[in-house]
Image (cartoon, rainbow, N blue to C red):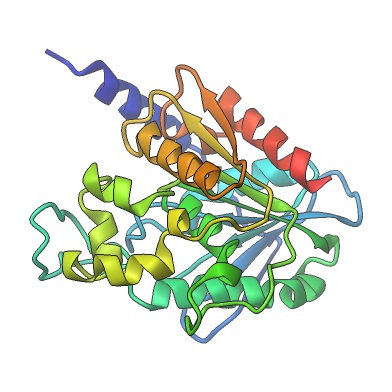
Length: 294
């Protein structure tokens, strides 16, 4: 008998990925590796200056999934009057990894420490890159957003000032952000690992189960609270890729740390409509971003 949830997921994914990639207005490098680049999209309404929305794409931190699939979403935000930076970063390899994770499937998820090196370096370089590549962008009004694994990275990037002392990615002070809007994020790595989200991707990202506890202290947004930065999570109730239990665990962890995280749970919505310009959920996301940015 057909699985209705699987059918919904397949249809929503097909819709989100059916849009042709949208070429950027400018591209700038923040490092020497081919993946260390940022694509910039100018606001389509001609306003100047405008908030800068930094987009971190998902795809379980795996190499086959790059920034191209989220370019229609970046263009959607540009058409809503934002300046947009679509960040690429190093992800996992293309071959299954030789690890002890019995639940790990598919290509390798993430690189340690390169995935985190890149996100930190990109965010540090963005204000200066934007001044040259996208002068309409106001670097004093930056909102981070990310989908799925990119949602994890957005939450992590906003929490670098509370990383353990000695972490190579730690900032001395909170980053200058208006806030974070995380979309179906892999926000609590422990809960995601329990649910084997994305086929064991969390354990792969951190280098295996035996390294989870040690490295999660440097990588898990749920362990890096409170941040003092305005944060909102948008989640589809019908999401079976990153279930709402993962987002709820993060929101609960924030509350225990004395911080309130906005939580918007969308009915009859799965994983992909949040970045699908043809879906009503995408307009909800744009509004959440606007509330922080303007």
